[in-house]
Length: 280
Image (cartoon, rainbow, N blue to C red; front, side):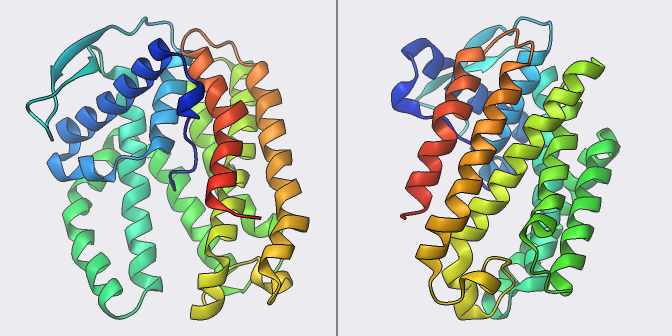
């Protein structure tokens, strides 16, 4: 994922902010424990959201303890004692990273291509381990990347079609957070809306760069030279539609914990991130 799913931190209560940091640090610790120290450098807020949601849908009450930070031994951080609910998001992060690196190797040129090519074998072992532990996530991500590559090779100009693989992938991943069929359907809707939001905001952020480098971006076929005006008139309403629909789905979930933090991310964080990333 891309780091677009994050909380509006100034709006969090102190206790919720501390819990949010604790889950973030717990995911960092789990990445290091399962996939090696360097995997910690790939940590993003997207997978912190996934960890929060996975924990929120479970019946187990998380307990926290203070330990020293691996990056700053002079500092102590709060961590979840039981990391079972953190394992799935950590595996998803590694699998997604591996395919992202492969995609970058195929797309980039020159020194950037060489850099990603050198990173690929470093994370291949982590990918194999994550794939073995969570084959369902491997299947979801592999299918998503394959569908996306086909659409890009075809120079797909239809926005809904181009955004669909990302939306479907996040939908299926979020559905893994519950065993209840009714809740799975709601999680699927939430994931689809947030996946589409991610695709739209990422394409809008990259459009000017992609036009200059002649890289694929579904928005450039309609935007042409008037990128800011196009984003303001055509893309902004769609992004807000995704945010509103995600909020409606969230209200139907049976959240057992971290409800205020997750609500902050969906109701406030998504909009705040959009405004920060895209100036329209």
